[in-house]
Image (tube, rainbow, N blue to C red):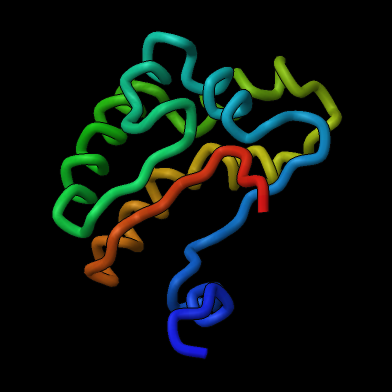
Length: 120
């Protein structure tokens, strides 16, 4: 069947899925960055749909939101929120998802879809 969703859900089209048990990934990113930086991120609370022409600007906006905050500071901030309920690998995965995903979309010359809590 041409155009089936299953044809799009493969390594060529899907960058990564990040799933955490007790805390939504959006809240992890929000607490890692702090509200001032997190509000500057593109999209609406982790949800965004970008054409290939929009991805580069979204990456630049994301880089500005992350600017001035080291990876260690991001992880320290979110550890205080999650405590021991989410392992460091998952925290790092959640915090790096948007910038890394946008970079991958640019490399692939494709658009980007981010769903904070997909209901599929």
